[in-house]
Length: 152
Image (tube, rainbow, N blue to C red):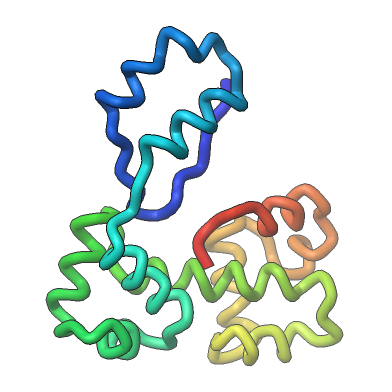
């Protein structure tokens, strides 16, 4: 079994992809190519997710996007199935995860990643990854995953 990670909010043109199903023959490279050709993220959603990735709050992201807060919240929820706060938290913990292996101080990583303190960051690591930041830092399999394409 294998899977493909799509960009957040990606839509697949299923009928177009299914037209190519008979030619795929478990060729992962060809499958990946066909998925790339038939997936898209609308511009307004892409911009909204980018704003969330760099924002501290949903209000800040909505203001950056130039839309009313409620409109922004509805767009994110409708197109991704998750509330905007989910995407802010995910971006924050992924940023911290990239830094923990090379950081001198976990407290510094927490502050730089916009957590209120190191304990807050540790709780979020446990929530998202099931391990503490130190456990994450010493696990090469987990560290390699954080460098794959994803939301940040």
